[in-house]
Length: 602
Image 1 (cartoon, rainbow, N blue to C red):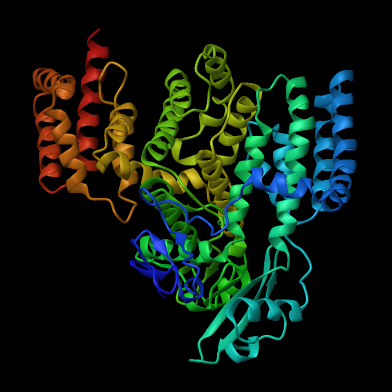
Image 2 (image 1 turned 135 degrees about the horizontal axis):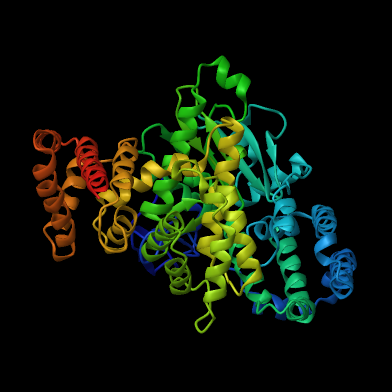
């Protein structure tokens, strides 16, 4: 597998030296000097060789009406009838009553309009700022399942892309494709050069042209129709921008060189995670339309019979999946945005294998820390700070009246949050938030949509594998570990908000719970956590905590004598042996006894 710094020939005499932020192979060097940006300004998603350009596409296709008029009718007729029905419902006051039926009608329409529209529907299924929950629930059932195309066409694509006949490079292990999707289909084969078993993903003929045409039609309708519908619903939504964001996403997905670069980066970042496996890419047998990767034998996480037959621990696999996904989203920011059952395998040796790196996303430091802070504010029911954070992240326009949103959050979320923090149901929380984001002027950025989609798919899969699994329950130990050990200001702020009251007093129950949960993660370092707590105690901000401890010790010594001393000694011994949970428990017990004695005396 070739990647990294090197040279790509731009002509017979000019040589371009590529920095380490580029990915290339022999198929991209034959006089063209093409290359793919692996990441820029940090860990970001690989850019395709050919980027989506809506302006250029509009100029080209407008001069070819025979191409788009028929497709326009095919899309516009069923969608127009559906939209007319929705508008009629609004005008007659029956929109909410008929919403479920209209959502099912939309699902049937999208399912019959081809791969690009299905992909668009799948993208919409995470847009709680655009559609009410009834539509989101229906669109989440969209399946990217289409008939396979002819082998002759697939093998012709290989010959055109790699310059050799299929039979000169590969020998089929299975006579039929092992998988078919909207963009391409996969064959299991053996390399004639070395006997390696590989998976070959070959793109459908004219895939880019079909997708480009559908994007043009969708964009035309957004400018001439959907913007008016948005105004009818009193929503300030730029549908053209939404289509353009989707266009960028799908153009990345149809470029297999970009996918190969993403796979390599994913391997560099996460193959070292315990029990995670990433197949290698054969870069010299990879182009924009052909991707050759290592074949992996394994079983879907939902294949309970096979997992049980081979003694594979389902709960361990789910835990590995969740912990790796959290590291991707909250630690490095470069994450697999579509971890559904078809993109994951349980290997016979117990490792979890990731597949299909066409849909990757990236969240910057401020974005991922902001997401974690949002979780903290929800746990604390601090709606004012949550709304301010949403505005800071660009979810809510500056100048918006925030008070009604705070009230809506307070009314909507308490029912969800009655359970313990570790038992929160992610889908319920997101559903409640989604209803609010649809009602009020929210505009969700791509990174947030990708994270919500990732975690939603993750919880759905985890529940299929283990009905008792809950994504927030699985995630909380990692979150606890991060806020206890990460020195970043935003995460220290998260720790203070979780463990302290608004007036600076310790919430011993919450702190004990955090310390207990953090022990459940692989990377938790108790020494770092204690160092962080010690640094805070000796800082100006920690003065109130030291005063609290001193007062409790003095009051306890006066009223309880030997019992107080025993708790202080217990806490001291725990700190000496780095048992931070026992120390917190001892101080909590001391506080409880002091408070009880004070209540009794009063």
